[in-house]
Figure 1: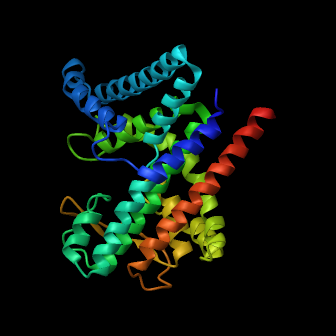
Figure 2 (figure 1 turned 120 degrees about the horizontal axis):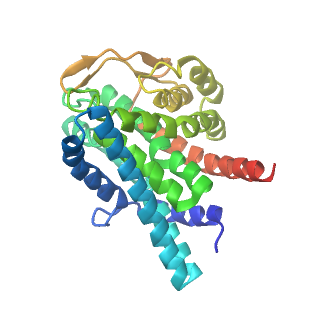
Length: 317
């Protein structure tokens, strides 16, 4: 059996090389469709929306765990290397660094061509806010915020859980994250039904978000960015976000880049008065999107090494 850290290196390499082709049967899409298919059934079965949502969440998580465990186990029955190959493939599908970088750079490309409408459309694919009226600087900020947040959700958190529990850990985390993105909204339909999904995501991302944010200043120092400011802003602004986790990485990225992120934003036509994160040291322009992607990539490598050492030490204490 190939050790899990080596499997993850292969999985990360596959993501770097080919990303997530749109025609590929991606497990996360199946998880999302399965979750939505359960919603109506659970609402009919349980009148209490909190209970219905909780049963939906734990059913999706349990099914994801079971399917992943069985796929790898069946592969190993035929040959250990087949089991490893399935394990690597599953973990590869849980890492989204390539596609995140690709989407971010596509926004930068549109801004470089001064096509603001195209830039708004492209940034709308990777963030939840209304983008139809954003100016160029606001598009840059929205893109960087998305890169910062998804550096954890789509990259370092899957690596963390992959090192902790292999492909099962990666897929269970992705199931929780998908549940949150499917049901974790504070609107009339999902305020109660999505409560369990949102809280599970908060718990699952707790350690990866904090560990990653502490490593962003290191990545900033290595890349010649503002390592000291990254740590300073992280310490000061990490709790200024509505999410208990997202503010950590956003604050670290804002400090590293010398930008001010956050601020008032529209979601579904409703203005949300979000606090600012970071200091407006530098005027944002499209090149900072490329810098944020570089910061994400270096942070990913450092995080993988740090997480590997952490779990090795914990295992041998």
